[in-house]
Image (cartoon, rainbow, N blue to C red; front, side):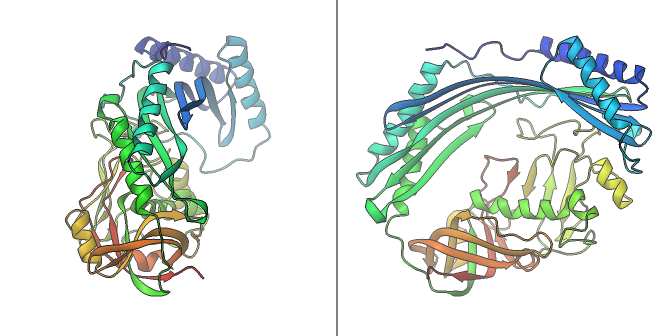
Length: 451
């Protein structure tokens, strides 16, 4: 069996790739490009999967790539390569420059404004390599699965367990003179189990993820929680069709924030493909509701001093007192809208949704009689209209207590109305994502039961 994850990405690698990025920019300038930007990425990883006590896959990866964009005035073209040899880099620049000659001028094209480039590049403690070899990773995955399968006699099968670890290095530079790099790590342990037999089988899972392996849950804890969740879904019963309050568990509640982000993203707005056109400055949520973006969180999943265009990030509200404060823009979409970038080229950084309630038990009590949703299926969200309809599984709740499992249900509404009807956000925050939110209670939705 191969041994540990070797050749960790180092600060020397960062300096080497930064120098390479500057060389690529110099070549582009020599070819006549008025502006250029280049991204270079290097990733290494190890992934193992086991099932029913046997090893299924062991995969080691090492990927690298260069992506270049050149501008001739406001004509833009891009090219990429996975080969970092000098001849290949020259050919990539030549290819991008040749393509640019045939593209149409775009008044919004170009680098972000030079005055917005980040100057203070901080370290957010995101790089924590895991000194683990394939044999040890396999042992951890087997331990998670074994603990899960042994947790309850009703666990009848397994979809397997996995351990993943990876390191990444990304360099960005542009012809404004900006150059910066980011190093990060990501580690996870997961387990998926099956309970019951024949037509009564149910499946669920659990996982832990962190930038530092010391912050992962133990394999035994992952397996046990996967078993508990799976067994809890046995013997589902139909739910009546009608209108009722719906509580989204933390792990699915962040999808509601994701739908908001999709609707206020610059690309959707300038294409006029969003139900939230012209909504900045308007109240979309209850007046106690807020969402804050903080790129400077130590060990945050998306902490960064600069965005994908080199623009300095900043701590800023997305929603405050229920009001949508701003959109989510890079420089191109901002220009198309006549606005300024919000330093979100490449996406948002760490988002936190403010809580106004207690933990999970408190949220169940606030739900009273309704549906607790723990899984969502399907893609039934119309970003043009905000119409929302998704398959769901979870639990019927009566008097603030879980009564029985529910599957094959559908929850439906309109996102604009759902946002306005949010009754509470819990303090039971799921920390496994850059979108940090507790459970979210929506006051009324249409729930359709099976059949």
